[in-house]
Structures are given as C-alpha cells and as structure tokens.
Amino acid sequence: MATNYSLLNRILVINPGGTSTKFAVYDGEILVLKRTIEHSVEDTSMFVKVIDQYEYRLRLILQQLSLENIDLLTFKAIVARGGILKPLKSGTYGITQEMVDDLREARRGEHASNLGAVMAYGLGEILKIPSYIVDPVSVDEMEPVARISGLPDLPRNSVSHALNSKAVARKVANQLGKSYDEMNLIVAHLGTGVSITPHKKGKMIDVNNAKEEGPLSPDRCGGLPIGQFLRLAFSDKYTFDELKEILNHKGGIYAYLGTTDIREAYAMADSGNVQARIVLEAFSYQVAKEIGGMATVLSGNVECIILTGGVAYSERIVNEIKKRVQFIAPIIVVPGEEELEALALGVIRVLKGQEEALLY
Image (cartoon, rainbow, N blue to C red; front, side, top):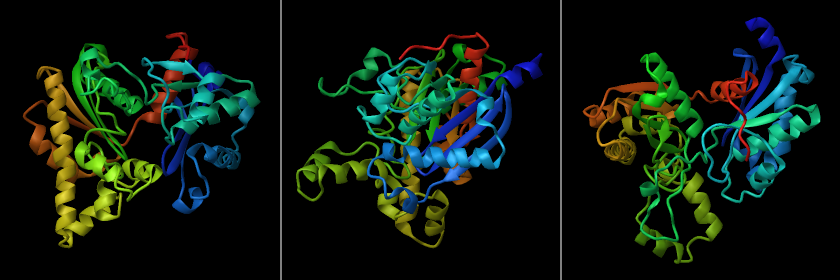
C-alpha cells in the first residue's frame, strides 16, 4: 500500500536561500534525490532585485533534474519554502496568483525565500499540478503582549525560521516520546539569520524578528542602539538602500571581520586576532541572552532548548552557548535544517487528507 502511494505522489521540493538553491524529489515519504546548487556573488550580482533571479534559478533546477533523468511529468505536486508574506497561521497553503504578486512586489520585504513560491507556481502552471508552501517565514502565533514595542507606529512583527523551527521541535518531541502540542521549549535557529522562539503547547508565542532584532548573525546586524542608528541614518554617510543592504547582508560578523564563515572567523581568532575572538564570543553571548529572555516568556517552564541551523555545526559556538544557558533546561543540538523534509511532509499530510490546505 505504501509503495503504491509513493508512486502516485511524487513531489518536487524547492528551497531557495541567499547563496544556494536546495531542491529534492520525494516519492511519498521516500527521499529520491537531494541536491544543492551554490550561487556565487558573481552569479547573482547581475540581478538588481532578488526576484530577478527567478528564471536563472529555475533553469538550474530543471537542468539538474534533466541530468538526473527525472521526468517532470511524473510530479503530482510542487512545494516551496514560503517568503515574507502577510502574517499567517502555521500550516500548508496552496499557492495563488495573489501570493505570487505579493512576493514579486516584495510588499513586506525582499528575501531569497520569496523566490520559492514564485518558482513553484510558475512550474506548476506549466505542468498543470498544484503548488504549495509550508510554514512560511511570516508564520505569526505571537501573543498580543509580545507585539508591543515602544511606539504604536512600530508593532513587533513575527519573521522567523518557522519552517525549520517547527520541524525540529516536532522531531525532538517525537524523540522524547511526547507530542509537540504538549511541550514548552525554546528553539534557537542559528544560520545566516538568527531567530529564537519560545514554543508553548505547539505555538511560537514570541520571536526576535530575524531581520530587525535580536543577536547579530553572520551577515545581519540584529538589534542596534536606536539613537546611534538614527544619527547614522541622517548623517548622509549612506543612502537608504545602502543602509538596508548593510542591515540585512553586510552587517553582523561580516561587518567586523569581512567574512560570514564561522570556521574562517575562528581561524582568525586562533591566529591571534583579538577582534575575531571578541566578536565570536559576542555572538554566543547575544544568542544565550536572547534564549534567557525567551525562558522568561515561558515563566521558566522550559522542557528543553534546541540549537539548530548551519552554525550549530560549530562545536565551539554550541559549547559557548551551553555554558550560559544549561542551567535553564537540557540542551539538544540538531545542526543544519530539516526544511526540505518538512516541506515534503506538509504536502503529504494534505495529499493523504490528514489536513486541508489553507487559503492565502
């Protein structure tokens, strides 16, 4: 029975990131193929906006599928990582023209993930098959008190690595013999961006906006001293677009050390670069401080802390964070990301009738 289901439900999974496009082919729950296409700065510098990379990235995926002798006509659905959309509840969504228009116009911000739904929808229209997204970065389960900033004009928004955070939370809950919906835990996604979320009984009730708040990351500034930033913004030193680029792509560790590679940063520190040593310590320090803050959101009732994302492969970073937060709860490390599998499983639940696709 499972074999027949698999043969009838081949899924193409697309996950575009800042410097790569990951994709996979699933026959039901069975992974058939997984590939990562790297994009150098030279490859992408010719494109003014992220959305301009649409045809370039899709063409590379189709070329790779052809090389692997994967017939496009065998796909029954396509699923992609969701981009920066309007606030949405967690779940699987059918991609619509309205969603694609929002992402093309980047109405709520530019990000490589905006390309996912656009590529999935475009290819789905050609193949006459449905396309979906699962748990986009704009999943919003924040409690009302968490939305208050210090100015009514600037409410706090939920922008996080929701897809991976929820996927690893479910995985860990299952390993512990529990249901995700009955646990209290904190997930720290440590990647190009950093988002730290307290999960209360299956909902992410708060988060540092991964584009505007929280710890510095390999290439993002995180939270900044607002007074100093205002003076910088009006100093005529940078244009609006230049500051935006610094905040989201040239800040954080890169701004201090000229690299986003944690391994390279540690090599610098080990060679006697004092600045590198302090900046790396600051990264772990700020992540730990944010985890501590999120523990108060859960009133200290934290069953475990999960460290995930690409930076969680660094034992030195993980150990530095552990030193500061291990008093709060047991720490479980799930390095990398579970996004391709999480996307596939979201669509499989819909195809099996276990849940309904939501409307955008």
